[in-house]
Length: 361
Image (tube, helix red, strand yellow):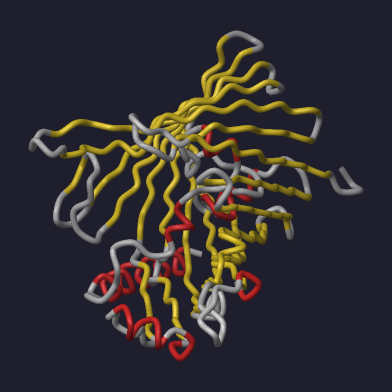
């Protein structure tokens, strides 16, 4: 097992250096995979890497699959953004193979449907004919296949990995297929929990193909460059998490968590930044009453914004959430802020989590 871990670490270092050397990689790629899944997590400002322990771990940190409460774990989520224009859906499932190995599957879709295609708005006589309007969807899909293993030679250490398949569609005009790998680890030390998640470990590659002939006339008339088939690379990103559970008497519990998102593609507009790494911290809290009623909150996306007068101000995004557990079923709700402090655009997010025991349990 120690040799396997050294091979994993060597592969990570080598592949990260190789991918970060790609100068053609965009700064933001596959951003729909940065939103997060589960109302519980979103209500806590995405502070999940160190303490997630259910089917959503396939997204947040596959090592956490080993802590799921029952043999079969299911999670569903639905959210709508920008006044319902964009829809975001998630489904996850996980189950153990044996006491040391767990597997999981996650499906994510972010899409805008019923977009008008007005290329044929004018008929052959030059008159407007609204019956000629067609509609298409712009959708992003991700399929995550997760594996987690408990490591016996270091007590409390769990390792996990994802293979993810990406499919992006822009109606009949363009589509892309991509693939990538994630790796994660969790370690429990006394009352503290630590987690590390490396997304796009070897870089995630999206191969785009464009049906340029469908829009050649429009591009020519508007003076735009006709797109060509290309490969888009998503650079590695590391997330370090720390959490601890406190007990306030016999009935109340308080979970505190902080995550640090680390990107290596140059300076970003975050509190800690340098040419090598930019660090975006976010904090989350979860207060529970007998693990039946949950109250959650968090702060994230802390940024310094420059105004037109040359001054700067600090903005942040607060998130709130509640949850209720009835036996093996948990219903969660989150109110998340995806706008700035002056023009906030709040989104309502609902998720359902179900744990089912096996016949032997």
